[in-house]
Length: 103
Image (tube, rainbow, N blue to C red):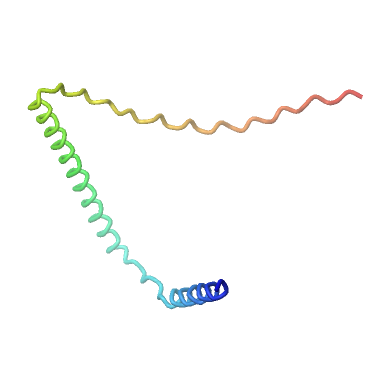
């Protein structure tokens, strides 16, 4: 039973590799088209970022209104501090040689 599974797996792997070998390479990218795509992607990213900020503000406003309506105190926002940038790697210090053994 094990040998049958091994043979089946080997056959499937060989078949899949032969199928992948037949895929033609991607066509060369036209610089003008690539530039337009990059500009379009940048515009979409900016719109997405603006939408995200708008919906976050809307959620906070809704939360505060619900807390106020329920008569509960509105918690103060916790400031988020970015972690400090990692210090640049110091130059490697030469290893201290062990004192020579006395004869």
